[in-house]
Length: 304
Length: 320
Image 1 (cartoon, each protein chain N blue to C red):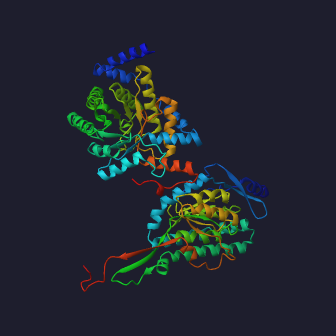
Image 2 (tube, rainbow over the protein chains, first blue to last red):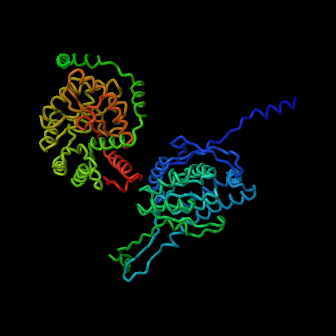
Image 3 (tube, chains in turn orange, green):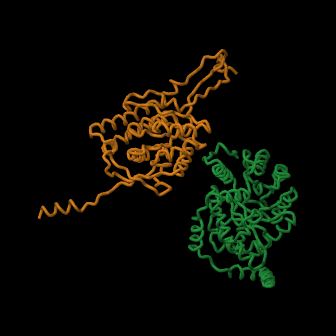
């Protein structure tokens, strides 16, 4: 009798498959085109269907990112840091899920996948700390030959299209997304074509981390199909080509020249876990220099 | 048909003979099937308009825009900028058609007239104590005369919604007739119903007929100053009214949805409604207009996208 009960219990439960969806403007839409493609693990076993985004999804993501830019770039650096740290907290809570997804996607053992996920979470924390410090490192007061203040401060570039690395589906992804938004840009991320699931799951974390909708938008699908309209889009200010192969990178760079986008060319990365330095942050910063019209202060505390 | 039409027109003159005949006629209009109307409007909104048809629709929509600024903070400079934009909506591409008109407050008509002089772009002016319409008839008529004497080609009046909702149809009718008279022969009259304040589709149908009986050249949905402005459903209803009115009287009346139309996609949906309901005769800026301001920029961005193949952005159209 007890054996029978056990058996029915085991067969009663239907599997609950997860529907992976895009993350655009703080919402989780399917692709406008209605298309999906099959995502497999490293051995070719089916994992899930992911949305196959079209250029219209890219366009919608740009609109969302542009809308979010004012609020996000205008938020205080301290506030951005808090939100980024909150993202790290939320990731920590879903650690097991990401370990599983990364292990499936990259064919890693559980312990190696766990090391990747830990490094990725630590990377968020690292960038969260940088939000209110980068201005001191790359900006500051300039000595000028006159009784004036002259200040240089780093400003975010705007809407940045990020072609995420193809091989490192989670650590690589976070290593390119976090520096873009830490400095106040908004991002449209083209997830790894072969293994987009960790990126799509990241959207679920971002949606519950006080990050305003539209600051990060995640698209999955054929990299070339999504990145090409983004590179040509007149309302995108910069593009990070980390995940583009040589031929595609060249095409995208040509398309990006049309409205003088900032382009970060793909650089070979041996180990995503190594300390990244601040280059990825400064790549999407512009320096604004202002002359303060007030001269040196008199005894009264004012020069007027 | 002509004899029938004139006979029908004659029958309609009897309708306005007294308050009770007018009420009997308006309340005798068939009731509106709200679910059916909204369903029809929604289904017409699913048509796919692509490539050359889309290019045609975008240019047509641009030529139908009444570029509008109706703010308390309007300055002569802003009106001049708007006029320049109406004449050359996209300065980087002179093949872009001009808009139909600029729409301003009466005191800005002279400025606007100067800004669009010699271009064929018309100047429309709101009047009759826009947007509330809560003033004495004498004040409203003075408002209209001001606008017309300053050179307005078109006058957008608001009806007295209070009188309409109270069932005082004759008062509304008489006001429209008086305003029409004040417009004279030089200005076309657009009658704004403020559909968002009329509460029911039946009322919108009654108001449409009332406006047309009183001599409106255009019937217009709304002022853009209330929560609910032009919707596909209420525009469809008004398009049915102008179609039926022409069938009965032979007189063609224009339609102008205003407020809330912001994207090219929306504008094209309205054009489909026009074509499928009133017919091709209305697909011209003499008979159909969009009251809008932000719509034009989206139309221009879509036009640039079709021309270049790249998505455009708000940095490449003028800010207004």
